[in-house]
Amino acid sequence: MSLLRVGTWSLRGRVLALCVTVGLILAGLGVFAALTAAANNRQLDDVVSRATPMRAAGERLSTALVDQETGIRGYAITGRQANLKPYEQGLATEQQLMAYIDGLLRTGPLEDTVRRDLAEVRNRADAWHTAVADPILNAVRTEGPEAGQAVVAGGDTAEFDALRAAIEKMQDDIGVLRDRAAADAKETSQRMVALQIGAAAIIVIAGVTLLLLLDRMVSRPVTELAAQVREVADGDFGKHIESSGSPELRGLADDVDGMRKKIAAELTEVREARQQIEWVNDQLKMQAEELTRSNRDLEQFAYVASHDLQEPLRKVASFCQLLQRRYAGQLDAKADQYIGFAVDGAQRMQRLINDLLAFSRIGRLTAGFTDVDLDRVLTEVTSQLESRIGEDGEIRWVDLPTVEGEEPLLTTLFVNLIGNSLKFRRPDVPPVITVSADRDEDEWRINVRDNGIGIEAEFADKVFVIFQRLHGRDAYEGTGIGLAIVKKIVEYHGGRIWLDLDVTEGASIWFTLPLVAGIPVKEKLKEVGA
Image (tube, rainbow, N blue to C red; front, side, top):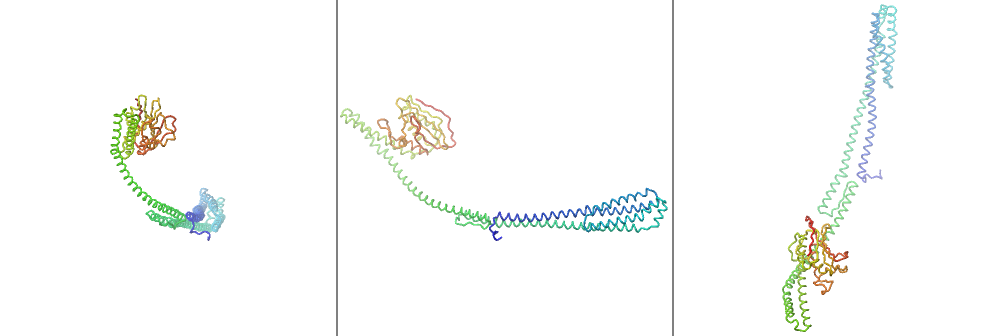
């Protein structure tokens, strides 16, 4: 059909068309084979169930007539009834066999010929009985054996010879019928074989056609498509991918080519991004080198601050303290006040420089991370702060883990946090500081909580800024760098720190430390009090 171009058919459509065509042809062959098989069965039935039994019956009929002829002659000679039994039995057999042969006959030219032959045999038998057998029987029965013998001697065998000739003709015609049935059966058998060969040939042709179709529309196109894909996989992203196979494969090739184009576009973006990253890395290297130089300058500053600045500052503080001791009360009140200011300023400057040095050294001077038992750290911190805890103070901790870090820095962290809790206690209220930890996926969340004066929410970010104070120096001592040091230590260990704003009493500070896999939490409960 002009409207349906085979070249546009899908592989599924072509295979379906081939299968339907072969199926229809095989179905037609199957119907024809069924009809041929039925005819063959009928012809074999004619040979086995009709022609052969008729011929055998003809032979037996000839034998029965010979028995009649023999029996009638014996009866004529002896006149005894016993010699007549073969005649009587042959007569009964004759009737049965003629009826049997007549029952096997059907319609058809050859059957009609046999039927006429059978009628002729019946007529000849009746004629023989009338002309020969019956007169002998009557003569013997009425006049005795001598009369019967005279009838036999005076007669001839013409009637019986005619009867035997009729039987032989019937047998010949039955043989013709059997031969014709056998020939027809042989012909249908050959036709069945031809049909089977034809069906097998059609199946083979269909199989070969299907293989050729699959090779042309699937195997070779898939091999070609795979080769093109390998070229793209080897780095030729500009290779156009196409297929000459079935519409499905052409569609697949288009999809793969679309994916190739997308990958090529993304690869171009990646290459551009890589160039940008390389440029950024170069910039970072330059900044790292600059940072290294800055750190060297900072270390130099630390050295100067710890030696060159400390020495004159110690002299100023020492001489101011010497003036205070030697001339206290000898000068006027203003002079004593000024000397006191100078001593206090020098001491505060020393503390500021020492705290600033400690802050700058975090992360620069390191001994490496080790497994740190926080229970042991809290025990050490409690020992260091024992004098500040007092008799009524209390520090508690529960189920603290083993973490990875620098033990001196973690000790400093807890000293600053717990020291702040002790510093900002409520008047006339014994301080209680609780340290707890819980696991949150891949990190430990550690909490330090007290019952002190607390921190207002508006100062949640300000408290971790260096040198930021929420109270005057007259109210609480210190430089305002403690929580800044805590934050830097936490961030140096890869954690975060924040103020818990949901507590109603005291201050609660949370920080995290990365989890070290394989180190179990110790089931401990320690409570230390002065």
